[in-house]
Image 1: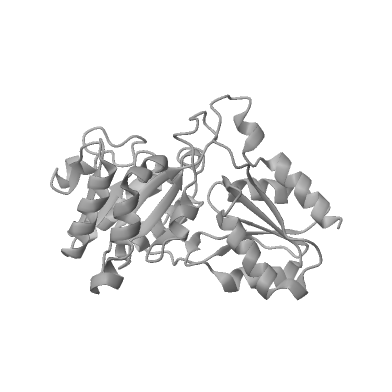
Image 2: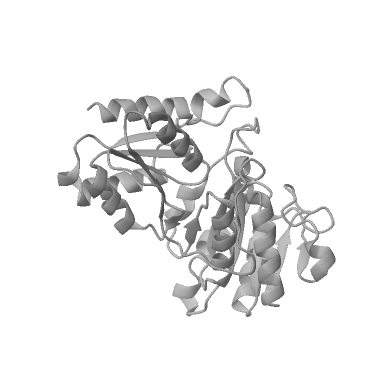
Length: 319
């Protein structure tokens, strides 16, 4: 399956297995969603369980919170992750704090198509995961493979907490892989995408594939490990520290803007708990603190690319 097909399959399987699961979002019904992730689901499950909503992100997320605390398991879609800012208060201050305030669970998922690389410009290309990592009460996951996209989505739907589910748009139709049939839940833990002993590249989402490309290019000269975080909250600290202990050199790749990005948290963890095991500085590759440009020439110049990652990896290997 493609990454996108795996997401659709995960939604379908969980809707068949649990009648409490319902979908909300703009044009997700007959149209099938902005990226066609919900094609055929309204036809199978009806408009009560696959609901087209007004163009009102605060209402979509707020309604999902109400449905969740009433015992349902809503999955709401933002057409682009950037638009979640319109529902920020409902997600951060209502969904994220409802359990602390009341003791009630809020089992809901907010699907967030993220990332650049397709000429979408500054309002359709952001990676907002750090906003929600900073907000207690929310889980944040970012699968990189079709198998994990399906399994982590099912896991997110079953989780009793609000989950921000990051789907990189460049993975939707460009990445394919074997996906198990039926239902299964992938744990919110890191995975070793490629084992190695000379250098660890830490990444998540689309950057995992860039890291794997670089690891393959470096294979004749170095043995590079690629650690796919998969989950940002909770962060698999043990997997990160174990990888550092194996390789002693770390390069962190993050498509989000550099300041306060997820990679900064990983770097802080390593600096605090694994400093004595390092044989070189912690290096980071991220997007500069600027909006993503529309220009097809400028956009690749700011986003992390395999060439930028390769250059930094070689510098670190030679340190």
